[in-house]
Amino acid sequence: MTEQERHEQEIPRVPMTDEEIEAANLETAPRLDSAVELREYTPEWAAGFEEEAARMRAGLDGLPHQVEHTGSTSVPGLPAKPVIDILLIVPDSADESAYVPALEAIGYTLAIREPDWYEHRVLRKPAPAPGAESANLHVLSTGCPEIARMLLFRDWLRTHTGERDLYARTKRDLARRTWTYMQHYADAKSEVIAEILERAGRGTPAHRES
Image (cartoon, rainbow, N blue to C red; front, side, top):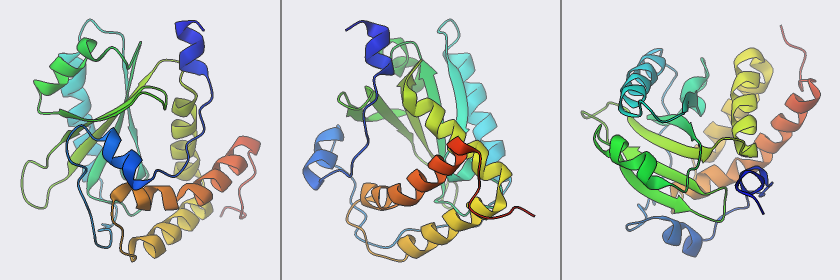
């Protein structure tokens, strides 16, 4: 299999076991053991992303890359955890030496390595002050199918309020429960995300948009 074929191969995301979560984390997997904190949307999230993206672009100068704001903080009107999700697209996410040192220099720490799922990497940056947002940086390779799904989901929710509201209700309902790991909460959203993506792929929202 060529490098390009490896990057473009479809790899379904399935709910992770506790053992898989612990294995993916480079240090002890942070436990939640509580409900999930959701905050109402604020434009400060978009501004926070732009600040982080500017730092990344400067630090990664010379490496072909693309930076995108993803996750719930990227959708106006959607409640979210106080964590700015960022997608970094590089030629080869498995080549950590090409980007990790530059990201460490601006405050990120490599936290998760998933070689069996698109060579996905996650770097984290702590909140600069109490009450502020932290950042999760997801790194994937150019051509990875997950990139198109992430951007389609974001753009569909931005332009279809009915779908956004459906997702918001699901998030609020699930956030009230107690979860051992944050990944369990993320996995619990998989069904509604798949349903929304299926409609987005067809271009037919679940509800008539006003």
